[in-house]
Image (cartoon, chains in turn blue, yellow):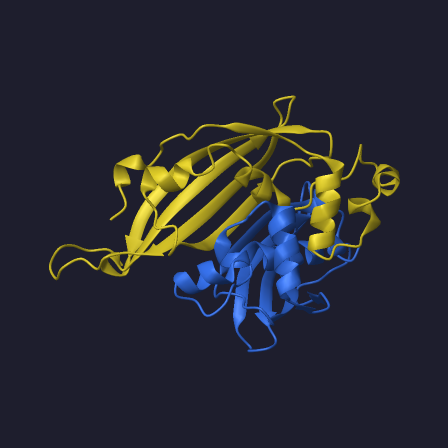
Amino acid sequence: MKLRDAQQGDRFTLPPVTVTRGMLALYAGASGDHHPIHIDLDAAKAAGFDDVFAHGMLSLAYVGRLLTDLAPQAHLRQLDARFMSITPIGAIVACTADVTEVEQQADGRHLTLALKAVDEATGDVRIAGTAKFIV
Amino acid sequence: MLDTSLRGKKLPPHTFEVEKGRLRFFAKATGQSDPIYIDEEAARQAGYPSLPVPPTFFFCMGMESPHFMDFHNTLQLNMQRILHGEQSFIYHRMAFAGDTLTFEPEIADVYDKRNGALEFAVKATRVTNALGEHVADLREVIVQPGKVRPAGAGEQA
C-alpha cells in the first residue's frame, strides 16, 4: 500500500491520459450521462460551444483511479472536487495527489491529500480537490 | 433567481441494482486495469464478495433514476447553461456488484454569488444498501449564469 508509510510532502501521480472523442462516447455509455453537450456536436454548437467537451466526472474518475492505486478503496473516506474549467477534446489530463497532512489517531493514520487534474496541453487546472484516507 | 424556498425539499428516491457487466464497462471507459475492478476472482481474493463499486461510480448510479430530472425541473434550471461545479463523496462502507442500493436525494441548498451573476443549486443524496447500512453521502453543486440584480437590490458576496 503506497500510503502505508506516506509522509507529508509525498507526491503521487497517474500517467497522463489524452481525452479523445471515442473516450467521451464510451464514458457517456458507461456512466449513464448522455447529456448531448458531451456527445452531440450539433447540440454543443447550438449551446454556443465550438465542440463537445468531456464530462467533469471523467477526469474525476481518473483521480479516483489514482486514489485506489494508493490504498485499497476501503481506506478512502472522503473525496471533494471542484471543477475549475471545462475539459476539451485533446486535453492531456495529468492527476496528482500531494500528502498535505498526516495525523495519527486512535483508529489509524489520517491522511489528507491535495488533488489536482491538470491539462498538460494547456496548463489549465481542470479539477482541484481533497481526499481523506484512514490507513 | 432560483427559488430559495426549495431548500430542504426531498426528491423521490430510487434503487439501483449494481451489475458486474456495468462495472466492467465503467472500468474500461475510465482506463481502470486493476483486476479487482474487472475480475470477480481477483475481487474475491482481495476479500470482496464481488467487483467493488469504484469511488466515482456512486455519482453515475445517482443519475440512474426515473426521477433524475426532478431536481432540474423543480428548480427550473437552464439545461443548456448548467455546469457541474463541485462533487463530493463521503464513504461509509464499500458497495459491490449484486448489491441493491437506495438513493435518497434532496435539494440541500440554493444560493447565488456576484450579486446574482452565478446561481448555485446543491443536491445531497444519502446512499444505503439492502440491509439499511449507510454506504455513502453524495453532494453535487450545479452552477448556471443568473441575472445580475439591479444596483441597490441587495447583498450576496
